[in-house]
Length: 222
Image (tube, rainbow, N blue to C red; front, side):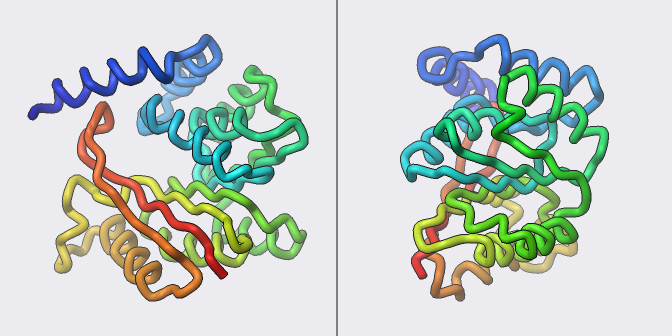
């Protein structure tokens, strides 16, 4: 199969099961116009996050890596009326775009976007007693994936679901000799998860409009 076929299949699924609305379309358009990298999750992946949040009955969500708020909006829409979400974004300009997109979606009272390095912000969440979160989505700098998973555990409870994006790296995850920090960080994350008795996890490969990649899906069991 080819990239064109993967993209066509994704579009078919999206048109039937996750059609764009004006808010989501505007979120992508405004993010692009502001110069943000076009690396948001695909629409069917956004719908997957929405369904996962809903299926696990989450009332609180932590997102590490906001970008323009596209995935944020998908997840926040699955929360109940009294739900809450905190999203962490390193880049202040990206955070401003995300806040505007979230406000247009009518979710500004549900979602708080915090700016700064996540490894600085996460300890503050712990100090504030912001957790435990019911659902954690990690989609930020890959070199820190093991640190983000470790913090997800600290801010979780038994039953919390953790999802990590971009874990296949086009198959480069197999390269044990690489010095690419995105790959070494992701491999270290897999090793951490494999040794961690509090996590029950799997990972799977995906193809589609985002090309060849994959997700890690884990549940906190203790």
